[in-house]
Amino acid sequence: MKNRLDSNNITLAIQKKGRLTQYSIDLLEKAGLVIDTDGQKLYAKCRNFPLDIVFIRDEDIPYLVETGVVDIGIVGNNVVVEINALVDTRLPLDFGYCRLVIAVQNDSSVSSIRDLNNKKIATSYPRLVSQYLQKKKISVEIIQLNGSVELSPALNIASAIADLTSTGSTLAISDLRIIETLFESQAVLISQKKINNNKKQRLIDNLVFRFQAAQNAQKYKYIMMNAPQDKLKQIITMVPGLKSPTVTPLTTKGWVSIQTAIQEDAFWEKIQKLKQIGASGIIALPIEKLIT
Ligand code: ATP
Image (tube, rainbow, N blue to C red; front, top):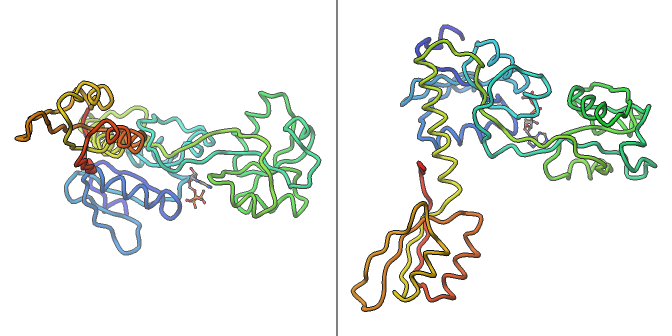
């Protein structure tokens, strides 16, 4: 595969098959990158940016970035920290949210992590777990498993598990209850610590900039509305936009048209208030890119 990679391009590693794969591809597309992938999802080329993409198991990505085999990678921060990879985290990516938790069987007598002293705990994240428990001065025997961790209490392998969860539903199905959260994670963009090639460094900075613009765009909506002129001050205070809204007079006397950006989080709450104040004909549009 190496000879299929162009040495003038930067190489990005993304998860081959799993929870982060589609999100990673979507992020590239939202950043305006057009990807041609091979049928087997081993390797892809970007048509409009000097970027090659390789599809790798997520736990191998930090090492490949650290050693410079690839230039950048998208991976869960939990994996980066567990491996203790010497890489730079360039950008949190706002997807792949999950937390590493300790859970015990519903009918267990364990009610807090202190009850786990001198007990066994099964996990795929031995480093994160032992560091956390050491800090709390709790001594456990860690049983390292690479999958199906949630079965270990039922199989009498361990009294507790430490595993990743997002909704908690897999734990609940396995009759487990959470007693502690050890680590909060999301996907991150990582790069090698020391990049000696200036051209590559510029390309990476350029990509980070594009990803940020795509992320910002998702956080805002563009809105247009008509409003009585005498409510303008009140509306501007409520939806100030990035600097200040664009205001144009309407041919109907005493009315203006207002264009502004509004944060997605506060969208419905603000729209309802704008309507109460007297705004009408409110149109909301998605933003494709937002450079602040
Ligand atoms: P691979 O098969 O590539 O070695 P994996 O089996 O750990 O890896 P996934 O289960 O797809 O792969 O998880 C990939 C990443 O997704 C995790 O490392 C974590 O950062 C994130 N993630 C988000 N939600 C969850 C969840 N509920 N359970 C596990 N991982 C999650």
